[in-house]
Image (cartoon, rainbow, N blue to C red; front, side, top):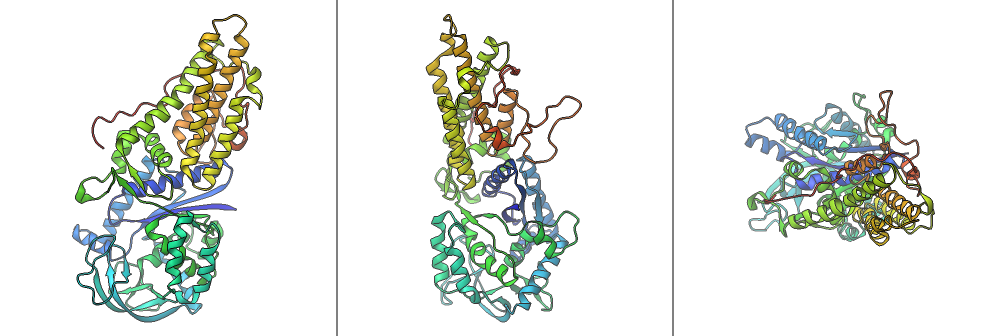
Length: 532
């Protein structure tokens, strides 16, 4: 069974922003976790490139729509590479194969009797690419999201018969776990309770889009087209565009991770479309919150937009990933605060986790021939740090399973705090000066180093680079998470541990007597002298 995970297909009206990076980093953590568990994963991201908004944005810049899309989608691709996002696919809806998948899907829906022609009247937001429910007599109506004037539309469109799926969608959203977090379900229930109405799936006189087969002058509505990108993305690179082949690769999706503003499209419209086409439904839709900055909504007019590329350049991947995943409850709105950002990174990563490993490794090397000390009582499953590691394992895995990244991050942090406390209580630097204490000091240092190993392992899905540095400093082989080319060769590079990641989370994995590399700081302090 393939674990298929998707970000939204990001709309290329503008360059990537912190919100899209936030979603993608979260999905990357899930994908890495599932691979470390041994699952077959298809991690999909991509770009939504059709619609009137794109056409107008391109025209304003003096570009063709395709040139504009090429430029912005390249920014997304390059940014994800710089962030070392482990996506398996990056789909663009201007991919020629996507048009064929859309046409095949539409043919199924039309054959099912779910396409009718009708008149669409109402106030339309080009930025949202959707009609609003404002009354006809509204004076100077504007989009509540974008604060821009709405446009009145009166045209003949093709409609999807969403109203036929009222009972099916009611049953779906009532299903435990389908909409997450649970707090999001109520708003969808309220929307559906009002009665599902057929929705427009085409536009007329809009050249920038996919033409609707058999309906001259009609172009697919951008949302109908974009949602199907999840299916096109399942095709192997270069594979012929066949809907059945795409489905066989990894459908249904295990989880769609999206911003809360597009929850309705993914929890109502998309499932109905899939039911009409006779396809299975996604297992879960997770709608996360928005990010603000220092208590204010981010916007160009305020000059407070955080550029994810600049953030990466100044702060590094580990720092940003830690703050976004550890501080903000995934599903809630979050506020990016610079002082708290630097405080958390320095206190958690540099001081608590990094210093634990550095000082313990240094003592072990000094007193035990630059190697892991004899384990003695530190190997016992009843040891306080063994119990703390087991608790961290349970909490960390449960958090990653439920996309509770805050809990998943707290687990290794609390284990590091416990290990630091144990080290301070045992004070091996003092005990080593006393006669007959060498065996106890060895056991104490072994237990703390073993706890540090568990911290490194539990950090792997969240902070893969810091995890790799910690494990290397403990003399451990690199993890094989199924991403790219891993492992060793005849030139002496270390091979991945043959045990699974979950197996390695058992207590006692450090081999007494194994060489410990010379310690160096695994996490530099974050010094931000000027505002980001």
